[in-house]
Picture 1 (spheres, rainbow, N blue to C red):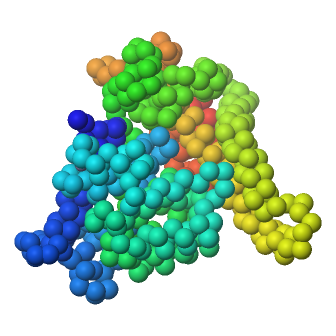
Picture 2: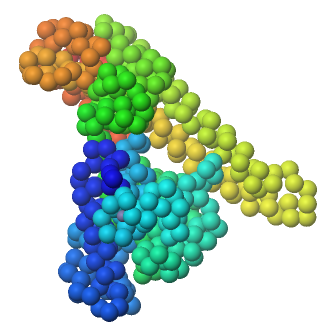
Picture 3: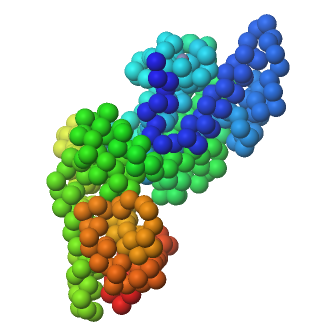
Length: 422
Ligand SMILES: [Zn+2]
């Protein structure tokens, strides 16, 4: 029987943290259970204090358990997989996430009475839903362990819902645990005040071998395709899956990898910059447009748009605010999608120059992009290691500049000029 953390690909550090926390949580329950069992150790003090009725410290910085967590990481790294596995370990009869006991089993299949999973479908998480959730979460767990609330896209909380959640996290019921999932702890994703009350579990991009294994085992991708996609995606699970299955994703990647041989002059460098920016915009638009339209339609339906009843005028006044709120969130999501698409392109490009560098150094490592290895080899001969390194650095500097809010077009143009001149 594989334990509940088995599907977390290449996240050893996070799994270690969660296992320790689950063990600490289990010890808290044993300590609280009558007749008094062994006294809890130091690391459990945060929660042990809670059961004394004292105001608990908001965040336990030690190795133990705390009542509010944020799982962050790039899409596809397994945020919600991690949150669910941790919930199971908290409900596990053995406190380990054994995978076999009823607590583990019902949590993993989504039927545990004390585990609430919030997945906003179409709409954002609104304040009424959040208040009801917080109220329920405060009740005594029926299974005698923990009330667990998993919020899958915590970056999609409305401001009012975020405030309702914050209140619960600030004054936590003694047996309630909140597990939030968000792309990052950037204030666009999660409010600073919520973040300050939570312990963060950052998930990393897993190793290519681990990703290839999962693509083959879980998605039935042929092993050689899985290996190619995992290497080309540089360990990003979602990206690897898309490359293995989606011809359009492969076409976009090929266009990016064609950049190096197109840089024949200043004009060509500016053309390449435009092409890269526009491709990222198009990709981002395609990825968010469908969701955005569906969300708007769902919200309008929920608000009873076009209704003529007596309540309609009042409802529409509230509706205008909610629509504005939705538009604001959609705009920030579109911006993020664009930034992500451009970043993926830059990561692909960095992989190419990294291949040229390792070839120039004759380092015994496999290329990231097997399909452009010959081109990278030609680059290695022409530029030598130093030239390849300068180009790799130009790509990494471009990523850093965009991260620091330099206008993408300006950063990409500067990069293309450096790539051309070397
Ligand atoms: Zn178990």
